[in-house]
Image (cartoon, rainbow, N blue to C red):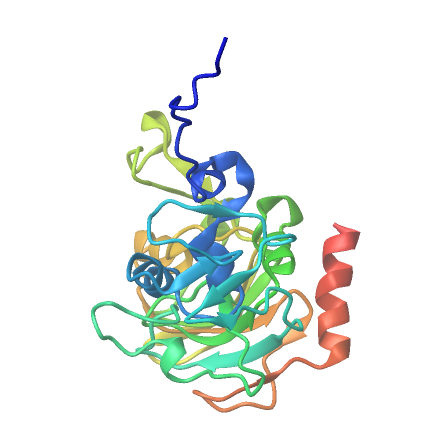
Length: 275
């Protein structure tokens, strides 16, 4: 009896492992962490066929890779998946968006901060466009996630100038907490609003028609300080962040940035281990 040599075998798809979500992390995320570009730009590079994984062209999304074992090249240049950690302090001025690029063309951090190592950094947390002060940037995903995780309650201190003269009664109301609406609640306790809390607040000085406050938070709800002060009738005129934990904004003018000292990095890492 002869063998059937005409039997067809199924075609092997070399990209199959990268179509499996259990393979690892999303390719564009790994590329962005490696300093290539923003995730959005990395997606464009992938879809343009400019990315290979282990020599196999990947031109589809989503795609998953294991950065520990897969070799990723962009336009035939090997991607450095393990760059040295970079930690920066930036004095954000008003009018700057807290992103590394902005599709609307507004001025953003990426237009200003470019580290000499070529590492692609990203902001740890945010300041709204109208606020200024201390912002930290890094390429260390682990530290960034730890610093922003609610379980650590990382404190942030602000100098806030508000309209009007704040009374002791209003100060006590702010210290007690203000119920704020979010996307799913109304602005009162009976309808499910969540109380926004303040770790500490003090009056630094009164001028004729304004008050300067020093205020510390351990939570970071969207535009929390502005919304709380608006509720009590004292809209914010100026907001500047001065501290993140024990790291203080110093040695910079608005728009400038610098590397954190090793002592400052140690302070941040210690604050996570201690919490």
